[in-house]
Length: 261
Image 1 (cartoon, rainbow, N blue to C red):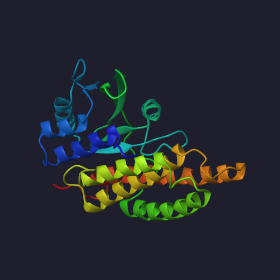
Image 2 (cartoon, helix red, strand yellow):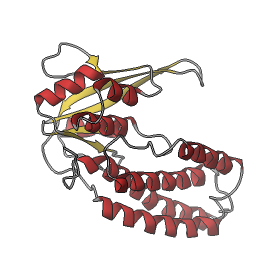
Image 3 (cartoon, one colour):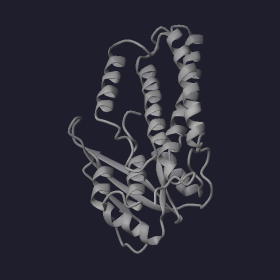
Image 4 (cartoon, rainbow, N blue to C red):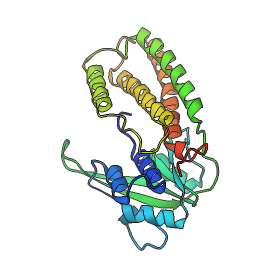
């Protein structure tokens, strides 16, 4: 969770564009990031894939006033509202963007080629109809912040006791990566997001780091079956809370009237 999901980048910078805080080229550049190219396929009125700049402008012209994020996993359709075809595609990708104001959503299809360290990544965003209904299980920023604090406290206590989250080269490398990102500044969200959303997303990334380290360190000191089960039970709700918090942060533009106009 040290890297923002592509849906988060598209929603955040798309929202900043709709609010007039960045130019279309700035938004497209930020969304593409280190990928080679992003295209959008299935837009009404377009015969084939188009670039991000044109696509965002077309969605705005169709009536889009904001973008939401969905981060679903099996058993937890976080941020989805249907119909089944869109939900299934979003679940396969484990992420999606839902436009606010028009009944369309976008699901990324990622193609990678080349050796490790020199990957050529292309993304096609498939535009699909969505149901205009409240998204599933998305908390407010305040709820997400409280849940994160509680989850981080409880999980840290359990994982420290089981000796799976605090030491070793994998943990040190993960912490170095997190510190390097933090030193680049508070750039985890696009311009215009409220400070609380930035804070919640940063906290969610810290929680995600804890979960990743605990998974990648293997069983650590949790050598008995009961201790391994306890570790799994500790991590599952933390992962769920962190994903809920990410969605709450990205969706702050369109939830609670916090979109700058």
